[in-house]
Length: 118
Figure 1: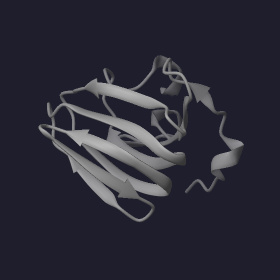
Figure 2 (figure 1 turned 180 degrees about the horizontal axis):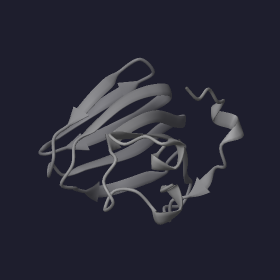
Figure 3 (figure 1 turned 30 degrees about the vertical axis):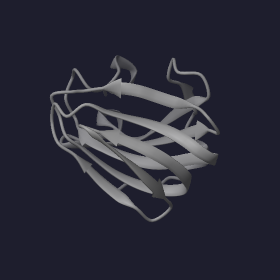
Figure 4 (figure 1 turned 45 degrees about the vertical axis):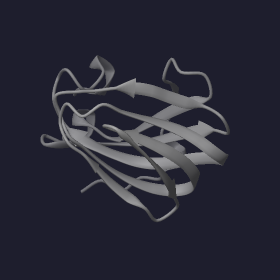
């Protein structure tokens, strides 16, 4: 078993202005099936529409935002959770001071950066 604190995990740039990621659980820790990430989007920051071959499970920890999925936009806030199916276009935008969420994805080579592998 491994127990950590999210603030002890380095915050990394995502390439999107005002958006950071912390890889909380990844193959680097021995996880073989799933990876858990912690995203922070500052007010107005966004991750534009994109899609992947894998599903996402998301839990909104703090703040408010708009999640675009498929052909709809949904306002989300702390406590909301989402399921994004494989290949569904989706995007995120912070409308509050921040939008912070956990995102779980499969531990697949194409989904996880090289430095997060054991």
